[in-house]
Amino acid sequence: MAVGGGRHEGAGVPVYAERPSLVLPGAVVWSKTAAPDAAPGAPALSPVLPDGCMDLLWTEGRLYVAGPDTHAYLPGARESGRYVGVRFAPGTAPAILGAPAHELRDLRVELADLWGAAEVRRLTARVDGAEDPVAALEAVAGERAADRPPPDPLLTAVVRSLSAGRGVAETADAAGLGARQLHRRSLPAFGYGPKTLARVLRLQRALALARAGQPYADTAAAAGFADQAHLARDVKELTGMRLTELLGSG
Image 1: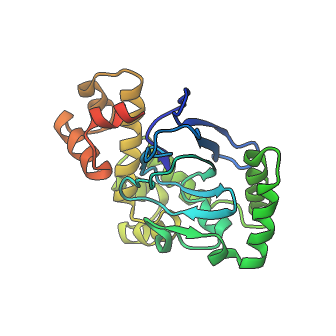
Image 2 (image 1 turned 120 degrees about the horizontal axis):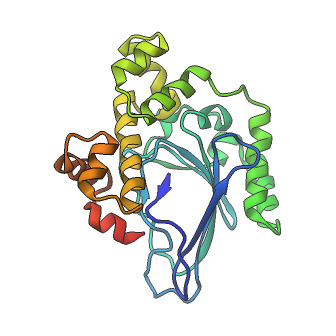
Image 3 (image 1 turned 90 degrees about the vertical axis):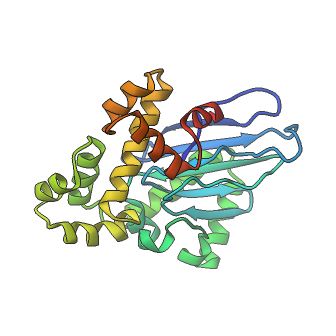
């Protein structure tokens, strides 16, 4: 669940910050705040882009889960509010959250639907009352993860291979799986098959390069697209925006 941009500051402008988790390998903890003096109707959050991840989220009085996205998620307009999230590494959230990823695909689900209302009320009050909600939410996720099996090393290797730009067939061979086996293993772990995961991870590689100032043609080649037109089509299909618009939204 990668937001469309990085850190922003200024009166009425959302402020976003993130850091690697201190307790969950590969996870990121983040916060985003829309200032109370934001223009009425302005969105508190940037578009949330597909990234192969799932998030545990908090906003005052609420804990919920963002499933893996196949397209950009556009938050509703709000005048103010603070949001905190733990973005789990691809494939690691289902064991921690207790739900297969494909059942949460493109959804935002109340945590009480997964963990039970009484427990979630207690945890919500804990984060609500914390001096540092970011650390508090991270602790909740870390405690839950400690009681669950460690990430499947095969799935970790799949993510590493696809993130490096290797093809699905090559990735399946390296994992010792057939294409259908890899697809079956991918659905509950990532929310979709390896081809979709590969597209999403390629999108994220391209966005990182483009945001760093790489020309679009060079970005396309380095990220694994056939050409710049291919990059443009994939960005539009996965985010609903043109690349120039997307970079401008950050």
